Length: 138
Image 1 (cartoon, helix red, strand yellow):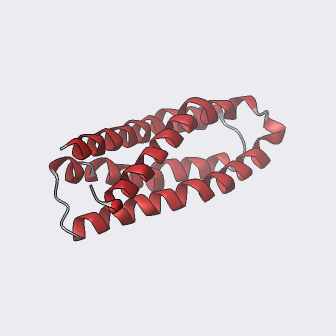
Image 2: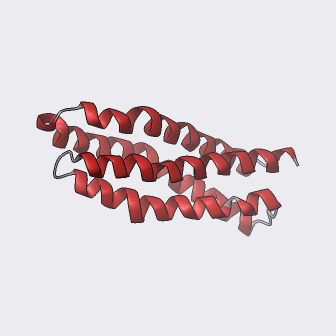
């Protein structure tokens, strides 16, 4: 197992842990902040979480490209491209626009849509992690 694969594996599993924390803890707590404080809270959330998520997502994507361009071709690794692409699409086409709506203030329906649609990324990152785990065993 190459050091590059280990790095890719570790970053993916860091994102798996992070997405489950966001899904089960952080996003549900949005509803508890209160309307007076929500805009400021949401601004801090998006700024601070971006400093964690963006580098990890970039490293995950970069190491995947590097693995594939250096001949890695395990079926499970290649198959993990589907949820990887899904995460990027979901992040930029669904979650970011929802967060943009929440910048104006808390809205119950928008918040519920954020939590509901984020299950896609939660399942996708978890499946990526499991596919990489299978690939590592092979």
